[in-house]
Amino acid sequence: MEAGPGAFAYYELGEARLVRGEGVRVWDEGGREYLDCVAGTFNLVLGHNHPAVLAAVRGQLDDLVFASSSFRTEPTDRVMELLVEMSPPELTRVNLRSSGGSTANEGAIKIAQWVTGRRDVIVPFRGHVGQSVAATSYNGTSRMRAPFPYHLPGAVHVPDPYCFRCFYRQTPDRCGMWCVDRIEDFITYASSGSVAAMIIEPISGVGGNVVPPPGYLRRLKEFCDERGIILIFDENQTGLGRTGRLFAADHFGVTPHMMTLSKGLTGSGFPLAAILTEERLVGMPRSMHGFTYGGHTLSAAAAVVTLQEVRRPEFLAGVRASGAVLLERLRALRADFPCVGDVRGVGLMLGVELVEPDGARSPRLATALNKALYDRSVITRVSEHGLGNVIELRPPLVLSVEDAGLIADRFGEALETLRP
Image (spheres, rainbow, N blue to C red):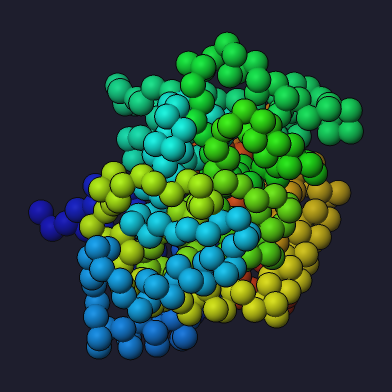
């Protein structure tokens, strides 16, 4: 029997077979054009096939494609130099021995455990640390852990700063920041008493685009400093201009003790990850954390161009401008569509939460809206790997104001299909 398209894939695939990409658009083999509002997998900050990135990679192909991370290369030296120049001044060291966000997060956790001699890791509810066995153990949702029989001990899960659905049933104006202060209770009663680190996405990605209230991250840094806990910002989605600032740390005015980066680091889809640390955290032997393709030379060449581009003030101003238009237009839809419970985000990291008439979470409507958007050639994602109730929008950062308006137009058309 003849196999159909995609028949040999282990997992389910969509029907479209993409053949070309440019900027915020991709085309399938039938010539249909799509607006890619998730930037590949949230990683194409410079969009598809950015010409400067491709030119750098082609040039590097002629010289050296790969070198072991035991050696220095010109691209990897330059990536580390640029990251230290661009990041908050306290972050002075760069570890490039990871190749993705999951392994970078694990590396940061290992460093914290090595330096402090402690074990446990605090992770917010809905927090997404990654997809490896170790990262899955730390993820802040049971759904990711349930199918697997063994998990690393030491994950301490605490309520996240999700004001729209506050765990403590408070409001930001009167809660006194319980979502920070009451972490102490979890340390006292739910941990081993030996807490090495807290890892948090400044704005949650997979967990529903939760934006913390003003002052939360600053209060959290103070909390960790007082207890000798290493605070790690997972900026795999929020970094490299996504918030309209170089890093979410800049947007919120808070410097973590460590920061992890991957996804957008190479601009147009080459694998590379980095762990940035304070000077005092240097010391874990290199043999304790390293991967074959960590610090990949070809990817580093792409990263150099990407870092030089996203640091330009004009580039970041463009992200803020297009993000402001899209956020305002999406928020305006709430008046006509009660199923839109909340619209939140910063820069071009936005989320639209779908609710039932009684205000309950509505994965049903989120799934239907995601499909209606796809039917209108807009590619989005549903939170929690397709099982949540938030439509995630993370378009490439080269999105124009005009295309932001086009996305909003099609969003309104798609919402019309959800009317009873």
